[in-house]
Amino acid sequence: RKEVEQDPGPFNVPEGATVAFNCTYSNSASQSFFWYRQDCRKEPKLLMSVYSSGNEDGRFTAQLNRASQYISLLIRDSKLSDSATYLCVVNGENAGNMLTFGGGTRLMVKP
Amino acid sequence: DAGVIQSPRHEVTEMGQEVTLRCKPISGHDYLFWYRQTMMRGLELLIYFNNNVPIDDSGMPEDRFSAKMPNASFSTLKIQPSEPRDSAVYFCASSEGLAGETQYFGPGTRLLVL
Image (cartoon, rainbow over all chains, first blue to last red; front, top):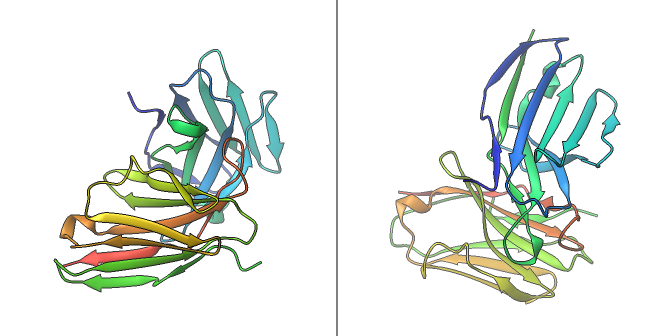
């Protein structure tokens, strides 16, 4: 089983739609969770951290379910500029609690 | 701050040639990471350094790959000899700490081995 698993998509949604991505992780001891965004032919960049109580940043909401070991990202009122790959990131099982990146979920927002 | 700097941005070489990728981390960051990204395997951690010392190189695919960090502001990833299956985007990232710390990525080096 992969340490961090995501549905690769693509998710094709119209502008204005609400879309949600899920991610599951295998290490129950993980303490740090993030969503990164990667635009086509660009480097990954931090979108937001995920806190136990859930957190919101504008149109983006991240939630953590420790019991089920999954993380979600909700994007409301999708914009064309939201088209990207969203990477779920967890501090993993390997040495030093390294960050482990999921394979990413690709989102395409259409006019 | 200029962010993480990588060079070259693109590299096309022939099988068997030596390839050297370079990285300058963000000043003050104690950790430096080298990743490889392909469509098939996603983002893979190759090696990381803490205060210029290699800590975990278990992700380095084979002996053809080597990495060094001679000082806090410079690191290299070398492939010798290169093979077509090494074609990928190689990212360097840096962070202030490990768990719970944001990693900042450079723009990457797109490597094509013919």
